[in-house]
Image (cartoon, rainbow, N blue to C red; front, side):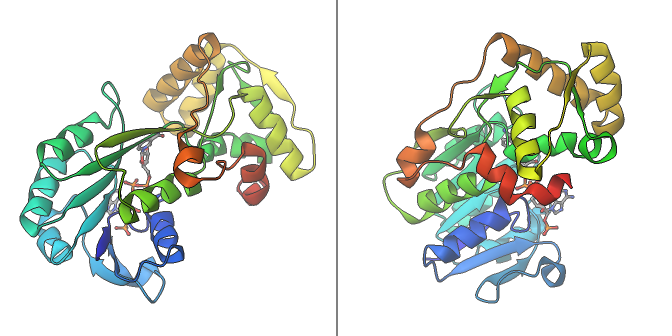
Length: 268
Ligand SMILES: NC(=O)c1ccc[n+]([C@@H]2O[C@H](COP(=O)([O-])OP(=O)(O)OC[C@H]3O[C@@H](n4cnc5c(N)ncnc54)[C@H](OP(=O)(O)O)[C@@H]3O)[C@@H](O)[C@H]2O)c1
């Protein structure tokens, strides 16, 4: 069974490759724009291409049974049509439910008629790196909504669920809402990063307007406004943790405290 991983050097795609190999998959093909730079494991068949350049896909899809579809909405209709033509029998996509930026992916995949599994991931733990510069430069974090609470997920767990859904039966036509194992406030996330670094990181509460000005410089005005509106919503209505990751994987998802220790260098 040949499995194509698209976006194979991406934050999630690269981990999907690792998870497939760890699970014993022997025919893993990886799609990347630059095979030399990609430095993928030697047992992986590397093919040059990108989801955004659909002319590169017929070659990449030849002989493929299943594919991990990275989240690119722009070309998803052409991509899924090509996958169908190539005889792909399962797509596991990283996307999002109706109302999210990624819903077009789910629609196109379903309309292709190819059996699918949707991975609807909540906020990624890596998004906390938005604080990395403040922690490095000032030793503190300035936040408008310290009581905003959600259950961020480790990319490693998204990839592990993707690998299961690619390799095992029983995941077809399911949309998995994926979160981490516990709901934590922004203040708790900052405290756990501090524990991982071995020092206290003060959290300074600032106004929405102040946070918007500061974050706009780091991530651009649109993303900063979107992030802060999301935090305001999570302060009013915290996101509960979903049991899906532990149900699918048969083990608990990675806790934020463990993730922060494993990735402490991101904040040093
Ligand atoms: N809840 C959430 O937060 C959520 C949910 C669903 C999706 N997402 C989104 O999922 C994505 C996950 O990140 P990811 O790194 O796994 O996937 P990605 O951003 O889609 O990137 C995948 C790969 O595509 C390739 N690529 C080639 N040309 C590119 C171009 N012009 N622009 C961008 N990428 C190009 C790159 O690899 P090569 O250079 O090797 O070709 C890149 O590593 C994030 O963008 C995130 O916003 C988030």
